[in-house]
Length: 400
Ligand code: ATP
Ligand code: MG
Image (cartoon, rainbow, N blue to C red; front, top):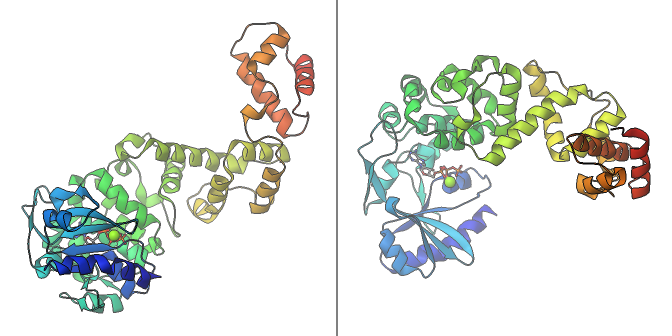
């Protein structure tokens, strides 16, 4: 499968070479290929400039042209092609303000973060490994290209990236590299939160998150990251891969700190996911009866419930009460879901207008409440979802 991705991209590299330029696979795909891991996307590096790439291929998208990246659409697939570049002038420990296009592979490889990410590979699967990346892959070692201190001074995001690779690949961090992480950690305060969140999501979901999360705590990294700096991160323990949103929800439920999610600059969808998880974490232990279980399954997405249930071990470890396994478990929620007579309010056989007409009265805040009670009566099978039964229920239960 991995091999296939490279085979499919070969014609692109060939084409670039036909024009007299060099082109290689590079970065994560080469690393993952050499490790026998699944490859998700292929990065191509070339001596051709973005303008030259645009003139070679018919379908191109200038996604990051000023940084040297052009997307080439080939056989209905998107390939990211980046010109060899060198970086200069790091200001405030962020990405460089200027990049220079160069014609020499070595220079491009030299600017990359870790030796395991700094291996180029040609169409014949021959590697160009100037910094012993293959040896580090064999030794499961994360080591910067060149002097660790200097590389982290240039771009402090590399510290978080190093820990995210440790988590994803289950590697160890080289001594010198870890020492430099320690001495440069405060520089992460200068990074944009968006870049940090991208790496944190991957870090939290890696198989060795237990170790890298501990390293994040040991380095005091969270003191320098917006949002997290308000929390007592030493009180949080993570021992298994976890979704970013669920992790944030656990943090908020455990510590009840009024730290605005806005400072994470995540999407509204991600924010509402966090809020859903928070509600579920708090609700699940309070489900004691069949009818509350039915209401829960009706109100929430079953996959979200399952996700919180699957995190019970982590919740317990963090002092949060968990669901009663005899009442709520994978089987019971599926059974309940299967037998729900309706999935959502709009499936009710009556709407607010019908009720007002039937009662010959004006609308008011009570109406929402009544509709909710009708919904619950239907999903718990006290009444059937027919206009007749619902209006009878209204006659018997609603007094204004
Ligand atoms: P993934 O498999 O998650 O995509 P990756 O190694 O491909 O991991 P990317 O963020 O996609 O990581 O970056 C692609 C390559 O670009 C890296 O392998 C590395 O060579 C280089 N790179 C990315 N970010 C940096 C950085 N901050 N400093 C130096 N090199 C970097
Ligand atoms: Mg990548």
